[in-house]
Length: 71
Image (tube, rainbow, N blue to C red; front, side):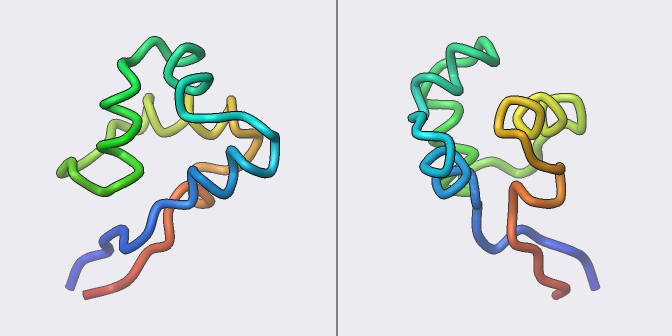
């Protein structure tokens, strides 16, 4: 069994602070497409450093970025 992300919560976290994916991409220094890939779970994994940076700018914990499921 492994823990896998089943849904990304970044869009709702962005909505909570009235920002968009482009704003987040600019803050982190990534292309907007990369943020879209993260949101749509089109990447295998995300580094803890990048997750911490996302959480910092979204004012949440790393655990809040995704809904997780044990499979």
